[in-house]
Length: 563
Image (tube, rainbow, N blue to C red; front, side, top):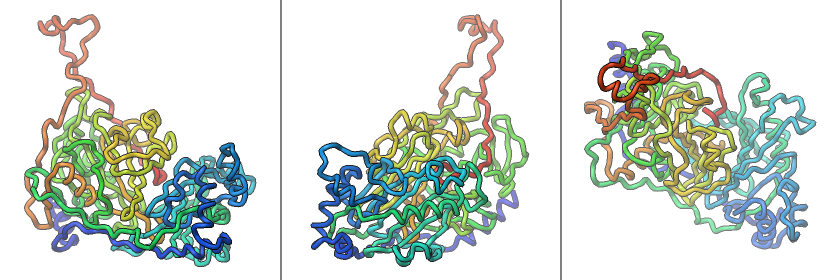
């Protein structure tokens, strides 16, 4: 316990002085040179050239005319235009170059456009040496504006000589486990990105050197495919959201960056005090209350494999601690502390995922959120039953998700917001059955699925939602802390402002919102042949409460889309 106190004091000192209020993000808008783009098409005016392109390409990429930047896609535009007047509806694959395959995800709007293409190396002779047999996904973005982030600088990358003639100034950037090729054309930043691992080749992993070859092939196939010239004032400066006038009697939250003591990358490295609200979200849980805290360094948590004492804990309610801080925990996922205010940020919590905005360069990437209650199978169970609470769309937007994948991305494209948020730990089979797939357009508050504990397999983690957020920069999409965006969204959901617990403040007693625990099976099962009357008379031995077997979470390295 003494160690925990010392760690807490060290973190408070490192965390710094006075807290701030909500901040709006800073952006830089592009000055789009539509005349240059029209000249490449050989058109007398931008409208003349792009009207024809939009008509032809719009048959395959719905809404392409909504893009406020020239759209670059790996298409045979000449063949597309020749076929544009055909009566039959041709397949998009006929016009995609380089053996790439269009997916159902294409979103264009005031903030530019985003799309995804797939590539199967096994189907292309030049890439037959790549043993990775899963589809490789390339995310292509044209950015009407980019976000200017505080904190650690973005990597500059390195020039790509092989593409310099076609894309002057193109740079290769390896950041947060994505290889990115970033270049400027028509005054617009374009980024093509592929998830990869900087390691030796394996059949189950795509290496970054392998991804390089695919990315260069993709860029070489790009051509002007659409977009509509706009005036230069369609970008709106983001504003910090207004907060409710009334103060909640219950909702409180620790300042951003104030992690569970000792739970940072190292015991002396905490989080980062980012007060930015990157988007005006609808809170992703259907109803309040909800509790943002750590699923690893709270009750029943695995301490992210930094060590527990005692090492093996199996009995419900058994006490233990995480070695990094010595704080008291119990082996019970339904314990009240998990379902109580105040909230706590865990964006930069101890994980081995790359996060450029965290002080140590690694972290959790997002925020854990528990719903308002925990349903146990019976009184003897130590784990919450999944699929009891609804998860909803945090904004109007478009889904990016292939079937069987656990991760659900929601892309937002408005005059002042360009973000993508990710939901984790819902069951992929249930998502498939509900049609949560690429191209689906959703509205804020629309149900996407239910809170689960899926992490590569059923019951692979605790009962919670992992929610993270990325914004586009000149280096492509990067993780930012969603904590204050969630605080702001939650305040709108409950109609009251939360109380911030700043460094040095007295921590109020934890406030839970009962009922914390319910039971999916109120009575234990009776022995075969025994009636309720017999049980009531005391002639039968009381059946023991059933306890669901705990599944120990495996430590695996996995793609960023599936973490």
